Image 1 (cartoon, helix red, strand yellow):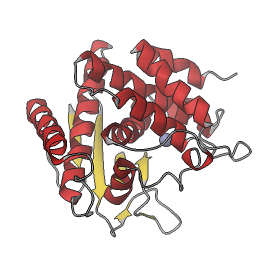
Image 2 (image 1 turned 120 degrees about the vertical axis):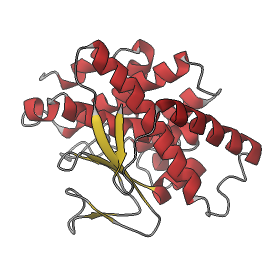
Image 3 (image 1 turned 90 degrees about the horizontal axis):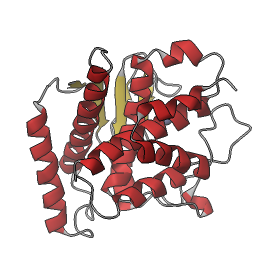
Image 4 (image 1 turned 135 degrees about the horizontal axis):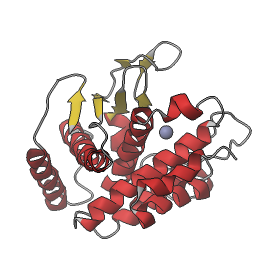
Length: 253
Ligand SMILES: [Zn+2]
């Protein structure tokens, strides 16, 4: 597996990541659900959670690629600290990504996620701001809602590795790629469930998060999918546990 921090280049053996993931999970359980992020002073914890999930997702896709005879996927990541920006090759009009960032940038092959944004997802603080949940669809809250976001962005990296943007980018709408990334997030989650690493409620957290980020802006080229479509895509991946089940999202019909 190969994931690299854009701020601190590092490569950990997966065993270390797994131990870290368990340690973080245990720390949060002991802290109690209401305590962990109340005072907003835990950027280090969110940094660790994002990294742990990324390494887990990366290990899953490394196995999938290896089984298919493909070279291991490689990606960098940047967990943008609260109040800071990242100068990405994508970004907004000014070329930077900030406190609301959750993106995969093909041009520099990096996953960017704002630690503030991820913490707000974890805390359930964005329900009035997200298009789906502000309309009563789902909610974004909990560690597996954050994991859903990470696995979705990693799904875009998989699309890049497989050359799907080059192959279909001109003919298919954004939504096709977004729903496939949700589906890919679901296949990873199934692998985590099969390994007994999900808590009760994690599946529902992911489904609720997918509903929450769904939007109704169907006339917009940037439309990502309605709440129902996004939750259905994640579920398609989760129920099958098979990335080939996510192929039809890029069918040209
Ligand atoms: Zn996306």
